[in-house]
Amino acid sequence: MLTRGFNQTVELCLPEGRQLSLPVDVVSGYKRRSGLTQSKLNASTRRENTRGAFALRAPLNFEMAIIFDDVITTGATVSAMAQTLRLGGARRVDVWTIAAER
Image (tube, rainbow, N blue to C red; front, side, top):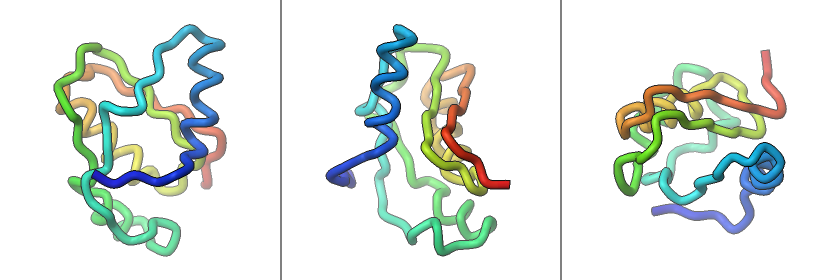
């Protein structure tokens, strides 16, 4: 399992969860392998780079999940995580973001 020291997305997500009375789960999903830095890749390479990159520690015990990502460029990362969540039992996966590149 890979971890990083500071995760700005978690820091942005926690207050939103409190304000909306939504549980925030930052431990069930994780990145299981390191890939290339996404910002340096084109869209098709980003999709390949994130394929199989995420996993769940256990099956989900909820039907709806929200992925909170600070910036979405091509959508490759959130697509890969959404697929992992659906395979883990989520029937619905929404994506919330601060900024999206077009």
